[in-house]
Amino acid sequence: MSLLNNIYNQLRISHKYVNRLFKERSCYISTSPIMRDLMEFFDDKKNWGATEVKTGRSWTKDDLRIKSNTDLHKLWYVLLKEKNMLYTMEHEHNDQVRLFPSPERLDKVLDSMENLEEVVRERNRAYYELETTEIGEQTHKTITGPFGLEIDYYETEHSIPKEVNAQWQKEQNTKCRPEDVKSFLLKYKEKEYLQNKKQQRRNFNHVIGLLNRFPKMDMEALKEQYPDVDIEKAKASRKYKPPLVFD
Amino acid sequence: MHYFNSRYPLYQKGNPQLRVFLSNFWMKLIRPEYKQPPNIVQFHCSMEMTKHDIKSYLDKIYNVKCVNVRTRIALGKTREEPGRGYVIKDDDYKIAYVILPKEHKFEFPNLFPESKEKEKEDHDKALDEMKKHHQNYLEKNRDRPGLPGWFSF
Image (cartoon, rainbow over all chains, first blue to last red; front, side, top):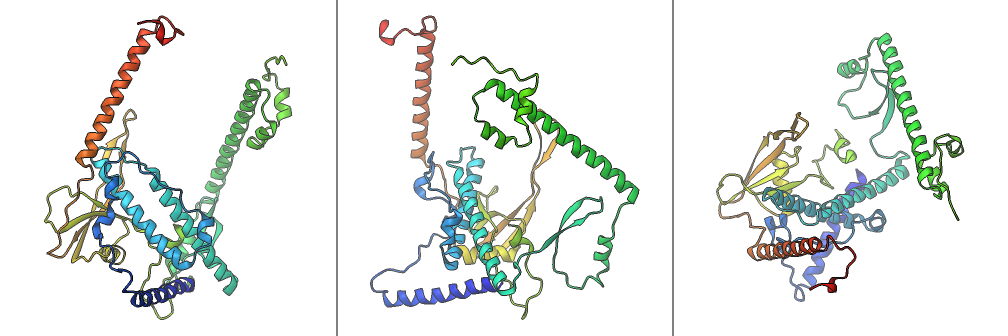
């Protein structure tokens, strides 16, 4: 949280600074804001009815890592507005049964926002590790669930300690009958085993088919894509019938 | 978005006011289904948003002051999957009716201007014409493949 407070303080300071700057130079530039209000939910007027809107690429993590916290904070809201605008336009186009032009814009914005969030989290983690030797994020551990399977348990804050939290205690103690769990696990593991086996066999046969059709294939790439298939064994199979090559 | 949704400390020292630094709420402005007074604007928004959230979202991010906000949750449509026979229900969505001050007016703009529409129509017509000519050409040359175009009249 303190990192976020830090961002907030920086923002406040930068606002003051900018205001002062503007006051000093108010005679040179006009500072009246662009009042677009609700029209910000719509695209530029020149793009209305267009069949294609050309855009650049999304913001990558490397782009964002060199930006300051203030810049990231501003960029987040620029992206958020863009996202709202695209949602509005998409909805209206669907309503009027039109083709929404360049829908990849939405993917780009969402991708950028995801990257930005990841960069902020990175910084937060680094800060907490430096200050408290812990990553300041929600901790989670794997526990055995009621059906005997391993599940992720995300630790959350509670208003009372767990020793007196009867409801939480009850939730933790919900367990199935041990015999039932045992028989379920047996069947579950059998199913998993058979699925793996089937997948392996399918891959093996597929590799033989590939070898038959493309005898001059790049073997390294094949090995990389199907690591569980023994290519020598595949070649020894009776299904392996490569075409004659006249070179 | 797991982090920002799930981990917000229940208690902080001094019990400060909630502050959202990177809001991930979305809102979209939609054309009202029924006729509304000119100062009412209709939105779809994130399911988690409250009336207060909507008010401060519009005020702080878009600089739009509103007098009052009313929300309702609309039922998603149910439809039959074509060819499969089972019923699918779309997600429910939250609709917000934002009331602007009396003197403000907002009319949902027409996003498909006449000139662009006409342009598109002409383009489609030309494309159809071209397709028809090509089809004719293929029809004509069906019995004599590989013959150059200049060979016949």
